[in-house]
Image 1 (cartoon, one colour):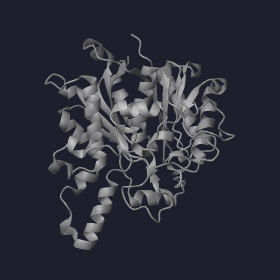
Image 2: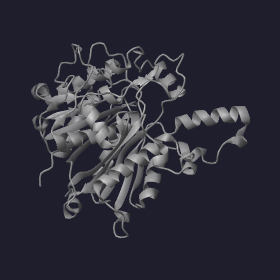
Image 3: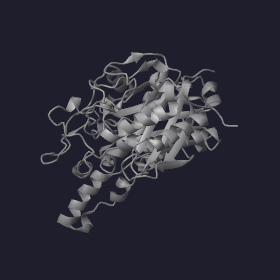
Image 4: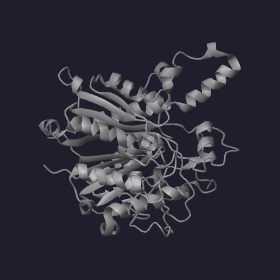
Amino acid sequence: MKRRVVVTGIGLVTPLGTGTEKTWESLVNGRGGIGPITRFDATGHASQIAAEVTDFKTEDWFEKKQSKNLDLFVQYAIAAAELAWQNSGLSITDENRERVGVITGCGMGGLPTIEEYHQIMVERGPRKITPFFIPRVIPNMPSGHISMRLGSKGPNLTQTTACAAGTHAVGEAFRHIAYGDCDIAVTGGTESVICPLAVGGFSAMKALSTRNDDPESASRPFDKDRDGFIISEGSGMIILEELESAKKRGAKIYAEVIGYGQTSDAYHIAAPPEDGEGGARCMAAALRDAKLNPEDVDYINAHGTSTPLNDKCETQAIKTVFKEHAHKLAVSSTKSMTGHMLGAAGGIESAFTALTLDTGIIPPTVNLHNPSPECDLDYVPLTAREANPMVAISNSFGFGGTNGVVVMKKFSS
């Protein structure tokens, strides 16, 4: 019998603000974090806009010597994990440290560091490469550093499944606790690749918006004028905990995780199938795992990237699974404000889903002024909605055709 798993801590480092309160306040008030790229000179790039984390201060979290040896994606993850851990009220003891796991997701690792040291090697030779180069770039370093920072000795894993990585991390952490491999898990996603190579690469794929003269309106999921996603960065971490452990210590419970699904499209390296078949199977699998019927779901935090293909195919997938109930659901894309955090997206959106269930407020899809004809569901356009949903799901679909869905419900004893 599976054990019950609940969310007892949330930590966010996002373009909307460092800290959960800052981010959530901006989100429910429809304020985005997208603007011109300042991280590097984007002149000559087709897309010159991004959602950058602007208020993160490295010195608040790390000594100067340590920060020099940590890529930003690792720094964001450690900070988000510490915020979540503090929020949970947990502490590591000799009795529990082997029962606390860390499972994170990351899509691309330390790409900016790779860019930097490739240039150094070319210009100054291989002996100028720092010995910290490899530890700065490999994707599992967030899990490793978080574990060392907390002193946790349970399962330590990283999912590198593109834009589904954060959701897969949360789902795997849920299963590790449900089946007894650990009692507590720090989980979520992190990413920071706003750099010339990533922006140039995604632009070459025609994946990014080129609405450079109007950044705030550039991310417009489900709108007929959408033209691509906005590259973003940050980290979203949550604390998952076995229910009896949480109840015993009187923890605040944001939501209960009750289901997880994962599938493959087996179709294309970057594009979903026209009918969204893989995403539909993934949602159906997550609902089976949660032992729910489609009509039990009230809200979907959509993958909703603002690309022409994704939004159309995700809408079709929702219709396939939920049938008549699809038009009664509230669906929104928080990427309309945060941009697309790639491997971090599922972590932050799992946090948003838990906060939606806890507060009863559904975040809006901003910039949705003219819905695309094939996108005809209730996307909570422009302004947040007080709706008190009882059950919600969070969708993530990644390059390579990998899909992940997590199901949560409002907690009741």
